[in-house]
Length: 262
Image (cartoon, rainbow, N blue to C red; front, top):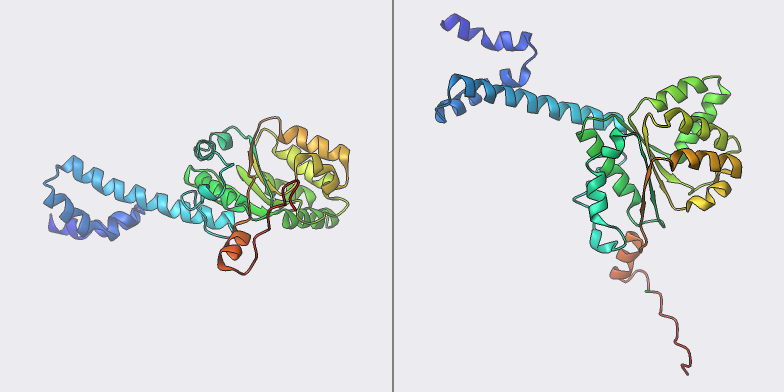
């Protein structure tokens, strides 16, 4: 019997149950202190292994997603953006829209937390088991343009169609190359009703024709994006400018004089 016990860590290692192996003594001591039955002890060991594997899965998927910062929904300051409905954000955090392949547009002026929400919702999607890729809009277009020039557009489109959720950040902040509209249309068409797209933008959808330089293609893109879509519109002040006003580095904008004032 003792020989069998001595080889238990080796057997767990061969079965790739590394969390059980590494925490074996502590978990068995915990089971003994709790006077657990054999079945309960086995469940305790399995929970430790499952928890360890889930933690590793999330870490790996988060790394693959290429989030530029670590942001959470708990860290979002709703009091600073009263136009935003926390209930709608909580509903989006369930990721049903990702499961359905819907699109999500987060729009508003610079500095109001659009990227924060995009990253936080992307992390929620990872936690729910979905593959995610985060990319700035300019980097996305550059990738497509280079792929087209090198004869590798199909490879790039296949790569970008693979994640269940593609997050495109800061759409409309900088002008795009002339070929961008047609390339983005191909990407959106490839993902249509197959994978979700989350786009953050400081431009209203009515301005997308100007941003892309092609009203017809912009309309075709929006037709596919808005067919199954959700929209978060943030109307508020920039976090960065507000902090500068608080610190006295930036003067508050004076209120306009009322009519009839001397």
